[in-house]
Length: 178
Image 1 (tube, one colour):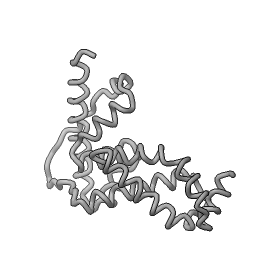
Image 2 (cartoon, one colour):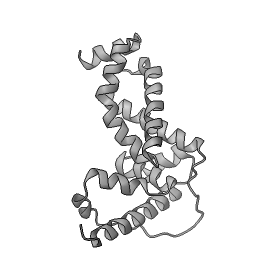
Image 3 (tube, one colour):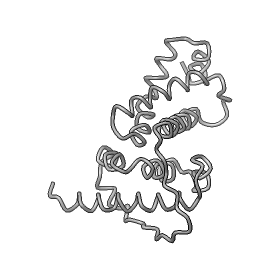
Image 4 (cartoon, one colour):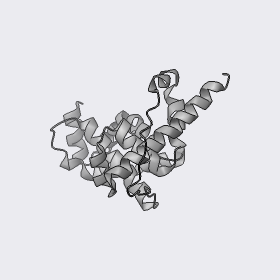
């Protein structure tokens, strides 16, 4: 069954197609959830909610662009909604100068995916959300500000602080003999 046939079968509420779609994409989407969640349990809840939304709205997929990209956007939006329901707030700043800290991300090549996910999951919720949206999902600060209803400067500041924390954690890891 190709992707188009799978989507159409899901639109018809074919439970086998739902299962196939879940099996095919759960791993990729769980990786996204784990980046936004504070722990594995929360990531699993996010994934479940994402698939509920996917199956509820699959008839709205327009077959334009990447289906996987559409699934990822739903998953990111679901994760953000869950964090916002939990009252995760990004701390706004007003007229505060900040220095963009740009850690040497070449050292990231020494980390495996699991280690990197652990470091990202240790960030405070607001920092983690903005780090993921900007660095991993590729949204601009203006887009993030609009999505989260914050100022663009707040997004920049939170990203800067998230990077600084990650840099410190990575430097600490490098000092610990393996």
